[in-house]
Length: 216
Image 1 (tube, rainbow, N blue to C red):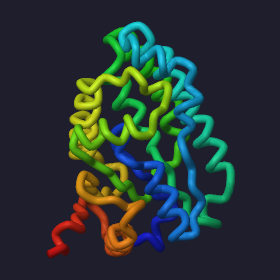
Image 2: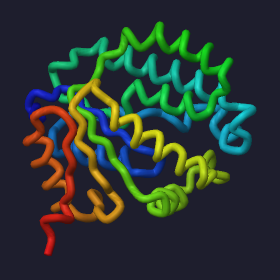
Image 3: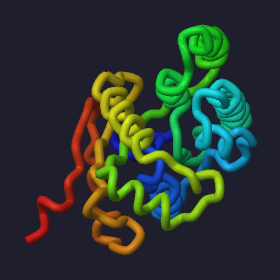
Image 4: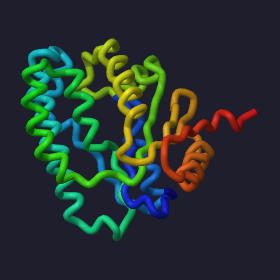
């Protein structure tokens, strides 16, 4: 699997890890179409961060339907005319649902999800970004989104653990795992160039990218 054959690349990872920035950079380098999740459009998100138990189902169903509608609109276009790079995969919605919903809510959610998932195109390659919790919290604070003003550090740690477990068992596409704690794709173009080389060398399965190993 090389990027020449990967027509649909998805960048994933926990909140604040830098998905949107990397998608923008890769789209420019690869002359690709960039697709961004409109998470700020969720009217339940601010209330969810303030009281997760009370507002989880509304927030989760809004995300699920919004992501589905975006995917359907995207892939009604010709996917093979241009490489497409997205800042999420549809399957990640279940990851958040399993964290946030109680048993009855999750059962309802799963029934809706099952109807939608079969109609969504899966990526050819996933780039999974990781970072230490303190790094993620710092990035979230710097971007200053109003909906994240009361963000819970404990919840972020739970999300990060859930992502690690999810991709440990993920088999939907080849996965390139990148720890971004000590690298900066925006400020250091060498890091980005090394990542592009790693994407070109992908042949399937699960692989790790560590540009720090090449530094003196």
